[in-house]
Image 1 (cartoon, rainbow over the protein chains, first blue to last red):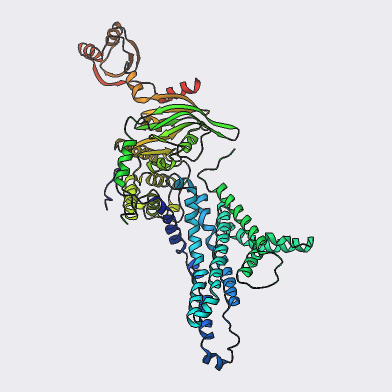
Image 2 (cartoon, chains in turn red, cyan):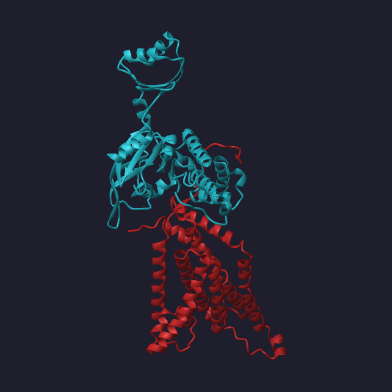
Length: 284
Length: 324
């Protein structure tokens, strides 16, 4: 390493391909993320429930042990089991996002770092993609990835017929997780881009979900309608999940309505990001 | 890995071709920029080719807007511009790969050491990880932050943050370095260091510099060409090197042992003189050369301790431009 050089020298070496630049941002952001012990602890905590599910699946197929406990009728590995799994992991994904998401963009805006990114051959879309990939991969590791592992274990224990009959559950696991991850990532990044203070951005994320649900219920009660559910993100998500996992809970909203409402949410988040993630704001 | 990596040598050849002396560093053809109803830059036309180009102007003149437009941050409302021969509308990515930019305001990534910060910026410019790390160390040594390179940027003083910004701008080996108010907020000694460093980078002849400042001294100390902007228009263009040559008829002498005879003899040659203490300012008459002055001094036993070609200072040029 030629650190003894004290004068400016030009660079004449190799260059990496343009598509790989987002990965640089992903690598550095992820490294920064796991420097926090709390973050690491929370991430590890997210694997306890999948571990518990794994034990339950094993027990469900170990009849002699369950007969001894007289509990062989209580454990059923079916769509409800995986629906409950995705609900629990979905909540954990939200908690993890509330800790992680706000720190992605807000420090760059607060410290004026965006011009440094965009004065390079690196676009705004690549920046958002690089930052989003941190959340997407992190949340994938606690949602559909362990979900698929559980499904694979259940398949190996239950046999080919069960696997063939319930293959759609694997698809539902992946799809429902990816929708939730996309919504959470976009929402967290949009709030992170608009609020410079990390803690406030985290609080806002909680507010959007909890106050949004409360506000929706208030609208429903006061106006004697069901249209308040359109602003309740949790309700929308649950509606889609119940359709994906073929569970009939007598939902008051159709799947198409929930999908449309979620797409509008995503569109708003993207518009907020486009408006804010730029080198310099133009004051017209 | 090697298949995934472009040939940097080819890229460098292209860069060298693009930065050939005949290619203007900045070529503006009726460039206008409008934010809503406000026209910030108005029909700018010029072609700048120097090693170090100064952008001068009072606050709000449009200097930073011009730089940001050249970097593709703002879209021109009309006209066009080229940077190192590349169109800012169509070749933004290419331009950004050739440029190193040091922004005016605080710009850093918190909770990151200087070396990681510069390495990441170099990687985003396309350098492989190992090369980026090496270049980050070199750049930080170059700007004088070697001892503090493992410290977090958040703990840096303002002057050190400025130097870190300069390091990230040069780490990837750009062909053009754009510095927006590089001496902002620096104390006199830090300012001197920064100016000296910019001079060293310029003298390395490996890249060209555009320096944007409202401080005349900074531009005068580092630049060869100056573009003065006022209210979004070009108020004056000046090639300082040519100005220096054009003003060679103005002399300032520091004399020892002079008396009235010497001044009288010089005036008889047709030169205009003005005396202050042991200094003599004069304008050489046509046909009179400097050696004639030396001859007269030798005949009268007057010793010339210093002889300077006095020229208009940048301040004079700037004030004239503002008045016009």
